[in-house]
Image (tube, rainbow, N blue to C red; front, side, top):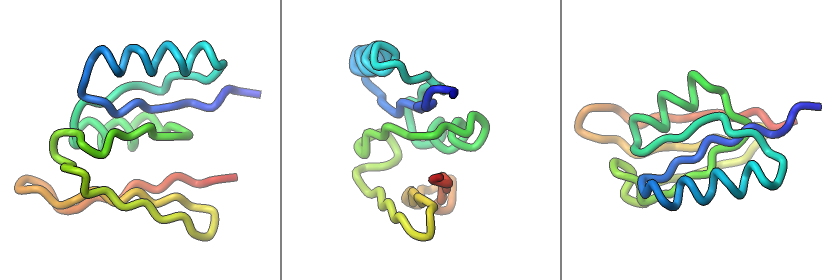
Length: 94
């Protein structure tokens, strides 16, 4: 069985490295990292992680994140910005 793959979304490099170490020590896989809203969207779509560990205060998010779990799908709604419309990331839960 493959380990759960985690995307770390954290803009503080030291905190991101600490989280990465903890995730790997606990036996989970690292899907990748993101440092801002744009990285979160791009990496979530391209890397298809099982879980996104998200700092809601990332640049471009400003704490305005909404997550909804329904019908086996976790929807993460990111806020609208000047350069992009609001974005929704879906993760299927089995």
